[in-house]
Length: 249
Image (cartoon, rainbow, N blue to C red; front, side, top):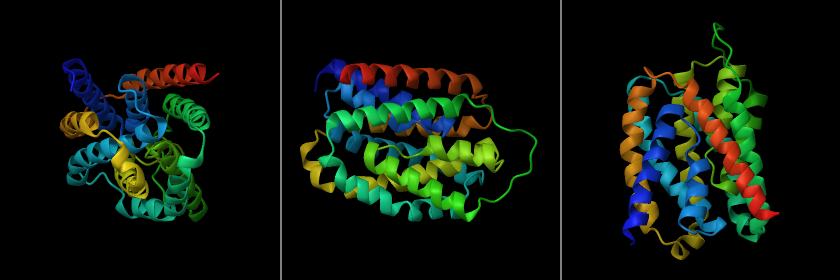
């Protein structure tokens, strides 16, 4: 391993862990570009390795959320189970889709995620349960994103929970982490066929740093204002999406 890339992997992992710990979403959105552009992974390898990195970081971030009872377990399990069809289905088909289509689709998802993070949540409204149609729709969409792009779907679940069902931000983030962990593990298993094609050295270093930082950030998230962090992250996603699109046209 090159020392420069080792340092890059550790810094990248710390950033991924901070994003997941503080925001509860977005880890795969930076993991995939990092593996693509800094470590020269193919799109298929990057989306697969990102699943492993984000799964481990999400699990680390979940521990303090469970202790503070900021996880809607039943809702998260339902979203994961309903999304299995699209998650596994697209995970098995993704190798047949051209790299350019995957990358442009990923860029569109980044833009959507950026928009969701710039929308102001509704405050002072009573929390309410998700309807059946909302659960099914959200589950299938998140499963599709995980299977296709290696994204856990936190950016989609958090705004839905906060904006439409008035779930407190910290509880939405905790629930998102559980959804991300379950979806990433499922999609990673579905891509077992290409595990042997991936050089796991650098993703492992990224994972170690991400796990350490995610656990710490998750503990501090409830007491840390994340408005500016989310806004800055949204603009970073817009920049990554623009760059990725430019490389494909």
